[in-house]
Length: 376
Image 1 (tube, rainbow, N blue to C red):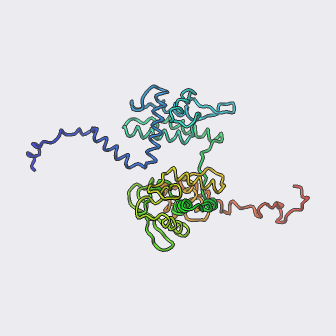
Image 2 (image 1 turned 90 degrees about the vertical axis):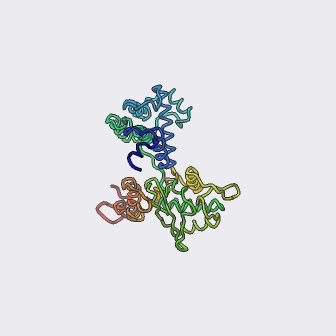
Image 3 (image 1 turned 45 degrees about the vertical axis):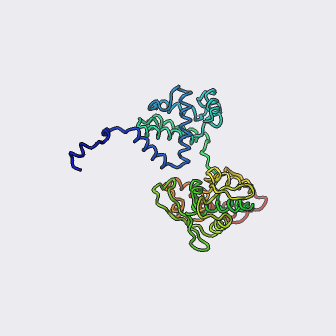
């Protein structure tokens, strides 16, 4: 087709170079949604629902009315973060009636201040909302960033720490596995716990995403399972991870108890131990961890993430090189994984065992045990 024919062809009106049509925006939004993990989408939706309700109650404006000024972000921080009140207590600025309405609207779990991590997450979601709308981002303003940083330091000085889930290191894992004697449910839970832990500290989204087709048996004591897109690797390149020893044996037992040629690897159970065709949800994985910890009589704050943090901590305890650990977990940030790894490695460090002889007390100038009537 020559230029004359092109000019005469019945094309639609040309697009404006610096503008996007509604259909183009919808297509772009669909790509963003499809490329975001389901758990992340839910957390964004929850945060935006909270912002929408809080904005309406506090300012009588809608979230989509335009870019928010940094003063609104500052108000959000002081409304929701507790600070020392000078009288030995804590206070926050959110009016009690608005707080009660947020709870009644089911966008807030209970009255009172929010955790620092929750406030930070909701500010991050607000920032992403503004970027997607191509609006000026209030969260990037120095006043907001400085306030958030100083609020965190103030809470830390008052003893408010960021709670982390209890790590499932080897001993609690063995205690949980010892409870898995209740028929098909126990066989499934044992396989799930060992795959998630021994297989590299898998996230719950990765566990429920595994399909039977993702498995490949290498030998009698080794399975390989394949990961696709994950939270930190979204390129779609499939990577194989090994399962060996007890984890491989537990997986074989589950596949024998619930044979399938396709579909979700870990499936729900009906009453009586019948295996359903539908897979587990992320919340159900968390409940399995909590239930097995409770059955084992373990104290702690247990969750699905306990398996991931426990794998890294135990690897540190056993002196596994950090690079090998990250190859299994697929952490991209050394700083993210280092806290757990260091905690584990320090447990076996000679630096934490400088005092010889356990609980025995010795004279500072002698290696001999002092007599019973010794007075310092």
